[in-house]
Length: 242
Image (cartoon, rainbow, N blue to C red; front, side):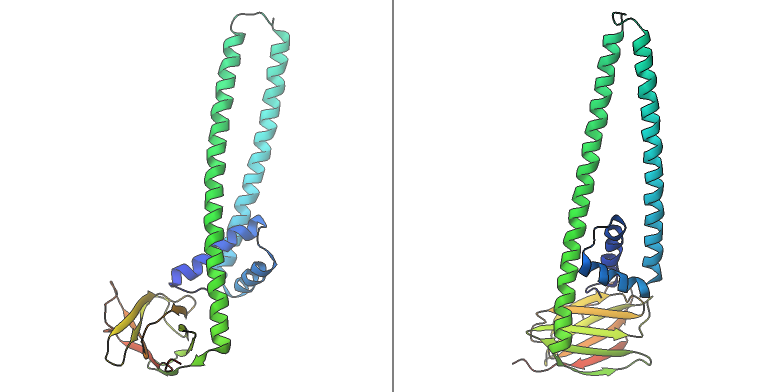
């Protein structure tokens, strides 16, 4: 379960799919991802596509190795048959050396870019896992808010702990955008975030919601308004801070 925008939460699992296919997930991440695969047809399809690509790349790499070996053997055979002192051999050797240098440099650039991408993926996964752990702790030990749903079929719970807030909502429309607002008793907005559901679910972690004593979720289109002006989906009366 990812926190943040719907796209961001699902991108966490999409990034995990790459590491999963490469065999780089540890035991804990592997359990999280395999559990997600049971529920997400999109990620199952993505894993299948990545595995197919990996197999194709492996086949291409094997073919290229065979072709390079055959060319090397043929080149060696021709060089052996020719006179070592024949004019032009030195020039061909220099050209071959330059080509090898260019290919080697290109390979280094590709590997560096791939390493940078992997580091970014790992960092995002670590942040998402930290969010999951904190959200799980809030859900288990936090104080529940009084939630009122205003749309048929929507179920939600809100819990607060140590100045942080978790909202779980189900039964939403994946094609809609939802704004989550925190309001004080005077009606001032302390935070506002926009999310899009995944599989009709909204999983939101808000750190430091300020002095908000009420949470409101509304639908909106286009740019998210600064105030909760759209159709209200649910409201929650937050527990008073300790």
